[in-house]
Length: 206
Image (tube, rainbow, N blue to C red):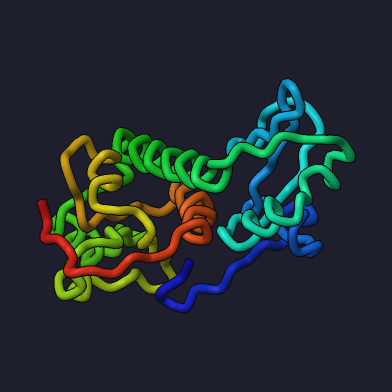
């Protein structure tokens, strides 16, 4: 998630084993699943649903492996129903979570959007996280740099980023340090693993 060379520090975080890879890693990088009514596999993006959970790395490849190799049945030690749109549903839920968290940061005054406002925050060293739409103009995005030892998020579309700021579209945004910034970064990292970054001509600031 870093575009400025920041080092991840996961010391002290609880870990869980991925159903698909068999590797243990911090929970922040995993998606939890529980078994719902009639044995249906239900994604628990918030990690709060009751019942025994199993975990899969937040990546399209790992989730695809878990579905294809019927690993959920092995993990739950029971016959389960895996929805056809499970991977897409997980992606939608995580994206919605990222948008909601950025919106909360905006309402608390810890997030801004728009090229000039973001540029101003970066100049004043108030920004700790730079967010840029995945389908934004590469030329425009190249004019802003990730804060020193800060974070970069580039997995939201212009429409999604716009939703977080109550506007039609947004290309550039920034988060202040503290507050919800770490939670936004953690959720965005999960979303990035679930998405294939799509290139294109890009869009200008709306």
